[in-house]
Amino acid sequence: FEMKEDNIFKASKALKAMGHPLRLKILCVLSNGELPVMDIVAKVGTTQSNVSQHIDILREKGILSSRRDGSKILCQVADKEIINLLHAMQSTFCPTDT
Image (cartoon, rainbow, N blue to C red; front, side, top):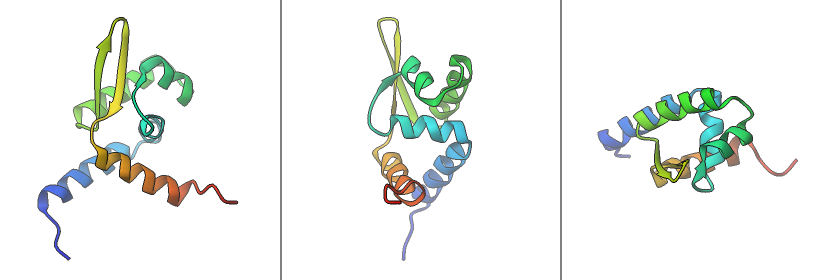
């Protein structure tokens, strides 16, 4: 079982960034695609200021990317591998069968 150092570093960085409950919520909300910041705020249930702070952290870590569209800031998960990780975590910790 061989692992590349780059992949280990990338996974470690992503898991650290996801270690905060609000950042994990933001990533879960974005796992289905790009959203404006205000939609993220509405879905995670906290203030715009708080969400923006955590989006900035995720952007600095290379987990999220964002772009401006008129007056809106749109955010998305920057790496397909992060989305795969989120889906694996959702299937493990948020199963749909009860």
